[in-house]
Image (cartoon, rainbow over the protein chains, first blue to last red):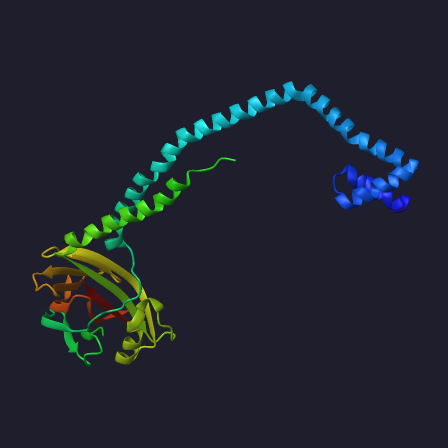
Length: 158
Length: 154
């Protein structure tokens, strides 16, 4: 292993990414190379130093973080309570609305609303009697497949 | 983010439609003694060649029965009437149609119909139809053509 490969492996070892075989090979090189050994010692000391620094920073910020978490928890609890209050109304408010809509449909559908196109089921019609004071009336029957027609011939108009 | 209660949201539409079904299901028991009279006023003329899609399956029948080239639905009204109750349907040109369901066998509908123009009675007739049956009443002049009434009863 040359020094360049050894330096790459030193960094990989510090990151915990080096295999056991490569680490053994690196150790063999470090034993015979003071420069790489010094580099390994320096890099290996960096990790604990950073962790120690992070720990110090975390301790410094701990009170502020605690206060922030307290505020977040309070906000969550408040939102949950507000939702619990409003959800009861939101959950049941549609019932009177649905009843009102159904009643409106029942009231207005039969008399006011136009339906879909005509699709008669039968043209079987019995004309029991037909008369007119002011017009001549003709009864037209062109077969079972066609509707019966009462034709009004208005005297002087039609 | 606020989360809603999924159980409540899923249950609401189901209960809503169940309620609607209950309400609509209650109608036939009440409607058993009623007749729904449906009256469509069609303007038939030789102005153009269009046939109103709202006429549905009777478009072809109108064409085969009459010599007009254009059929346009002018108005359509639907009333639920009890036996003995008279319903008035306004028609174009100040004409009116009065329909009264008469007692009939269960699968039949008997209708007394009177069509008038002002104080003049144009037609008085009594019809016996099957439920869902249809009859046409035509002839009264309207603009450059005639008026054809499509009367059906259920």
